[in-house]
Length: 88
Image: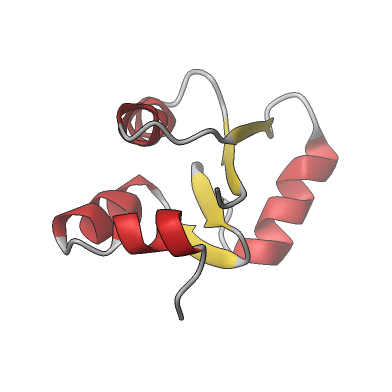
């Protein structure tokens, strides 16, 4: 199982949508709450180049945000990332 991390805030609807999709797929993931830890937000921005949440990572692959996650799913590529880690 790949390492999946979501940098998020609990009141963000996009964060909840992303988490829901991953839960529906049976994926275990770490929730990294940037609202309570400024250092996590800084790390997220350094890793992703973005300041918005959610920011989703599968192993070392930066998926992006909620829309990016759902786009991967629509393209049929998300399962490959989840099963194989990062194929790229």
